[in-house]
Image 1 (cartoon, helix red, strand yellow):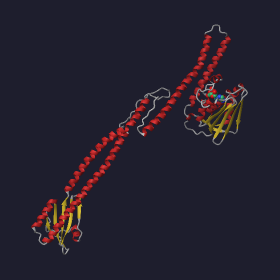
Image 2 (image 1 turned 180 degrees about the vertical axis):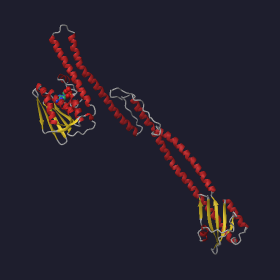
Image 3 (image 1 turned 120 degrees about the vertical axis):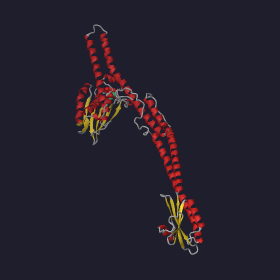
Image 4 (image 1 turned 180 degrees about the horizontal axis):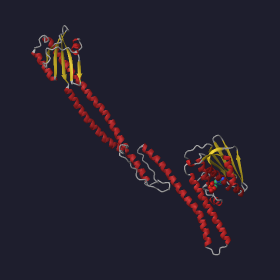
Length: 491
Ligand code: ADP
């Protein structure tokens, strides 16, 4: 990269700074995204499986117990247990049932009195709970208490012939082992989840690394170019995105190259132009120094030539300085509301002596009074250059016509001459710095090749435009268009 003073500075390799550089990387974000995408469905599936297991097991348990109770109640009715609860076979079955399921069984008769309690705690007591009442009213209940880990059920003891309710069986069964099963399942699910997360993390890291490789290639290629291989261009066609980035970069590189070339050309042109008058001066001075008894007339003649060369050198430097000043930002413009008719009159007045010397007639046509927001110094310079060229590249007895017109938005200045004209193939180049159609002729009449470059820059800074029409041996017309109100902004 070039600094303003023109030195080439090698940029050190691009490095990310800061503590959180990995977190800010695309690789981290891709990995994170993959982990989230992998983990969320796993969590949902795991929860679904655990919940389903619990529901199904509880349902199954309830069905089994209800089945057992159905068998028992038939036996109770058949054996007349409700009248005499001492039947050893039935009591044995009760014990077996409660032992197997880790539960408690109560038999309540029509008077809400507990006639059997497998825990032997409430026998003989009254049991008037809502569930029991509901059961006597024909609504058997079964409920699962998740918090306290048990299932409670009421089963009506009904005479199969008379359909009369003789009592209620109240069964409560522990579901601790269902919860244990659920805990184990949850634990296993958690470990599986951790495993999935770990695998996804590793895979995501590896995958994102390989996904990012083309981008690293792009960075490396750009760094290589930054390190000095300015002549190359980069190509990473692995992804569409990398292709777009490299294409954009190559475009920028081409622009940098062309800027660099024009800078080099400009520097070499400047050196050459500045050297020419110096060389002439040296030749003149040397030839005087190398001769003895030089006549005073020759001295005077050579000194006159040397003065002309100094003037020339001075003009080139002045023009260069004007150009450098114009190369600065548009913000440096000193905008004022000016009468353009007066400005052009002044330009023409100043150049009248030169025109008279060249035997060229200078005419100004102002079609209307025009006031516009402009930088007086810069536009005076621009128009002076155009009129001066029209006089310089004219024929004796020729004319130069400067005209001014305007509409509501722009004012238009044309500088037409009856001069030597510009060959068609040169028209596109005359605004370039140091370009001259006929170098020796231009030099003879004191041209530097910078005049039109200065003119165009000054006009463009005003957001205006300049065009040229020319025919060899017939004449040339430059037409300029500039906004009446300055619109500002960098150009
Ligand atoms: P110079 O200092 O040589 O005049 P300019 O940048 O003003 O440099 O012009 C560039 C070249 O364009 C001139 O050398 C000349 O060949 C040509 N040119 C400019 N104006 C005219 C004109 N009115 N008629 C013919 N040729 C012109």
